[in-house]
Length: 344
Ligand code: AFP
Image (cartoon, rainbow, N blue to C red; front, side):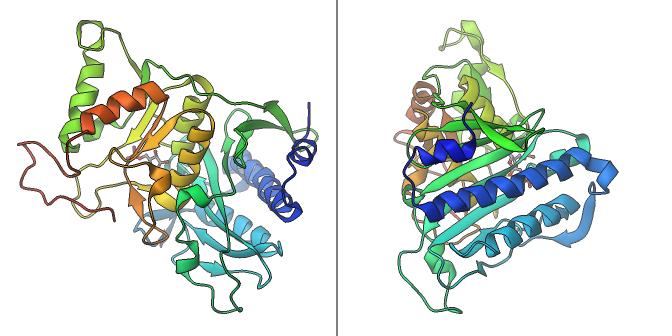
């Protein structure tokens, strides 16, 4: 089996980008160890701090954020960093050419139940050179199409990395003995058809009408319009749910919901939706908000949230056909007193 280093050598990447991928991979090995040791390392549980999004930070959110931030800061190719756990962008090296957006520990509510968590990353290029002290959020606000290397590390029964540099999707598995990531799937492909979906059903009454109608058809099974039974899974860590979709197909969605009209979307564009949407497209699947391709969204701020529907191409198309002709914020009669949200 090829190591990550051997594989990347065959891809003719810019050596600085290759080096950046190694930095991310090496840091994930240390994160994997901290996650595996759990209570033995005293890293479980919450802190009393909140992140910029008002979520209570887990100890491991902060530990993993610091690990990645420090490692990336030490890499001279990195110009700046945006993280779920940082209120503002962090400036790194003046000569750096890359910007890295990351969620250091996606699914962190799973930590204390010893369930799946992961790290998600997205890399962009600096479009212009700016003097030290003048890097701003504006430099990060590039559409998902501009990503140059994205992926995730999944800390599960095995530690795995999914990577795309725009040449398909590869899976690497960490050999804990040698501490090498080894190539275990060189061409990850999402089956176009599926009978599996992932959604947090407890929000059903708050979804827009098109999503309610689509899921209702799936739930009717063989006697409904889809004429087949569907299975449902929900890991509560996007990284785990998307890994399943990449591995055996499926549809994953965290749609618009009106539980809290001030927060109609859950997933973050720059370090959750964009990297996952690019991976899914590179593996032959589709990713949309319901109304537009995720990768075409022009971001308005680094912590922006968006609705996400992604996975097996034919199933995503069927879901999108329910949205056609409708408007975002179409809640049907029951919730029509709510204000239609804009992308926030
Ligand atoms: P955390 O990283 O804050 O735990 O959030 C994980 C996440 O953003 C995403 O990975 C999951 O798909 C989603 O939240 C789960 O949300 P629910 O708890 O509402 O099901």
